[in-house]
Length: 248
Image (cartoon, rainbow, N blue to C red; front, top):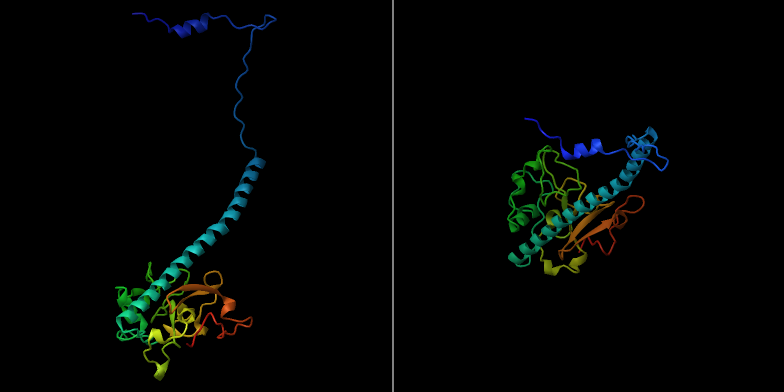
């Protein structure tokens, strides 16, 4: 059985070639092949991409630093909340500061013992990262995400309690939060560069959160201060800043 050619094919074969006004056959130019990039154009494109990346990377870095600072501020805010919850439950008394370098047996007294209870947190002494520098710290209010310091094998505190609020040594006694003058200026906990859980102004971290540190005050508010607020140009600690009161 013979098949008929498609109508469009017959029309194409039988259709006379188009002619110009001079009677010549009209030649339809072939479509030019796509042109490849030259080496120069490729180098220019790579250069533009590199410039854009150089402009965007600092912005990404600043965004990451901001996120870490916000997380740290949230941590300190929660410690401030735990302090007020403790005071409410204990007739306005603040917790005792505890041992600066607690051992595994120091599980009865100290801010790192009493305050986690108020937030229903696991005990500090049970944290694997407390003694293991390789342990994953995860997302916890004990750890500032901007602070890369890890355990020395005994302890790990990123936040340090101001030792001057309750007194130190034999003078370490419980004190009522209501007895403290201007609690909004009295430092309670702060970003620390040192190991101990308890310390003073010389323990403040000097290079966190864009060249400074964050503090939670006895009224519960959190604030960042730059290095000049607590260290002079010679690196000496400043103790007379009215916005950072250490000895109430």
